[in-house]
Length: 241
Image (cartoon, rainbow, N blue to C red; front, side, top):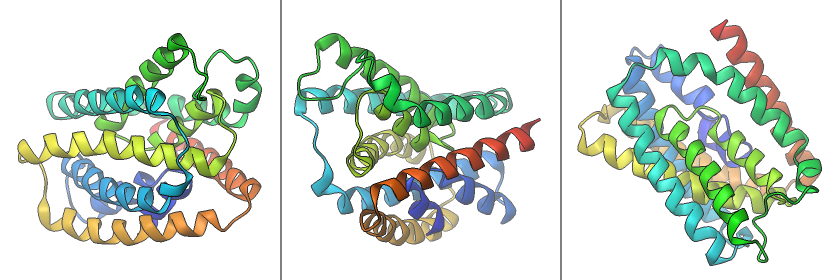
């Protein structure tokens, strides 16, 4: 519940869900898989709560969804085929870059090098979609902090409404983790008893968290996102190095 609720507001739910499974005695890779399944359902629930906040044209949303689905599949393939230790060591640096990008996103948006507005050029959509594809690979592979990175990308792409950003982030997150989850299921990599319990909590936490976030002032939610991002970055640096 806490992990999915945190994802619905700012991201970082895997910071809670993944360690909880490890502490319960589940090996690292199955923990990652079970957490992915649970957070996917939490994202579906929070996406439903944000449905009225989504304000993106189809010509922008479609390529972002395709990029998310393809990237999620590639990431899931990498997770089950390659060792994770090398990739995990890169997580603190990714979190640091994402945090700085989110904090200074408005200044970057002023450059207008990317945009997800209704007037977006084809080149801008292509660059943003490719960036989302790379993020989705990470999301399908490990996923901790993916929401922070997506929010950072949307901030750099010109979005300023934190609730609209969370709505689009939820939709893209569902596409990424949904494709990864399907691959994990067909690969029989899911520990279902643990995943089922996590999923029940994630559905409640995702939906309630999204509703609660929309009742807060935008500046409060943005400040909370930054606080979570800084905390996650610090944790990953300490834990990894």
